[in-house]
Image (cartoon, rainbow, N blue to C red; front, side, top):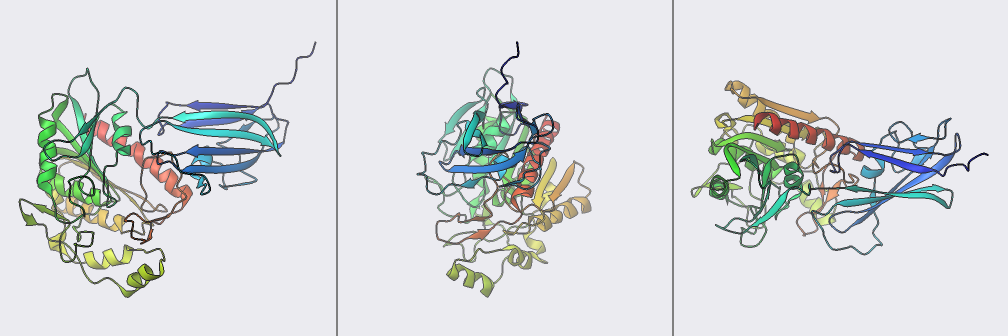
Length: 422
């Protein structure tokens, strides 16, 4: 007696439950050479709903492997197992939900034949391992979140800094801690009693965080790292050049040159100071084109402006040769916010010139832009308005190259810290 034909179904295989893990995604039990549509929907951790789709044809055995199947149409063009995730766009007519920064992210996949729903599945990806403990830090003037592993020997620990958006950004720190180290997500302005703007931020504050970690029995103070993004990358390099206890530095789209502060009160002032002394900084006039774009609401690229400001400004270069450890810099070749690729090369040139005795490397992703964040989320937004004043900033890159650069960069960061803080 013949059995009933099996229904179409999804097959999902993740190397782990974490959002930075590799993924296999297949559909089986279709008719040979049948065209179907896969729709994906997701609420992100900031309360925004996203959606994507791909129209795909099954092979001669009635299967679709998302890693090799090229869409007939959809929100992405070339075969890509992660295409449905990074190509999502926000659905603006859905009411935003409450922010849930560290909750697992659920993506609903729906398989359709024209208007008929064939099957539905859910993919859950964690942004922090359930094994990682979380402690809010509000002492000694510090504002941060400590992600740690209890009941273990003292572990390597990494201070994680956000960029010019300010506030407390936990995502990189939470995910990094899920791979076996402790991390301290540290805010340094724009929240609670910290400075309101990124102007003359004291490195004494970073020193205070280091001292707090040194007093913690869960910390191996001989294995302290720092990881900063954008202006946080500038701060990470500067901090490591001042505090020899830092043994490994990662900069996402960083600068090896100190630039002016950012904010209404920033005119003529540095971004950073230490023990009351401001660091020299590179600056100059703001081009008329940028002022005009501010008024018209056009997206602004600061790339050429920062290049112009930094050219020849030797006194504003960070003394990275003083870093007592290894350095990894990540940049995008199409960064439109500032020239992190060029600014990172200045660091490499300086380290090489001084025969830096530790490992150092700059990895440039040629077609990526400024947005290097936690991998696994949509990358379709190339313009941001981080300061709430209506100014739009152009980030550069394109969704596909940004997504793949983010994933590959993150793998390199994990390898780097495993090797040089082990």
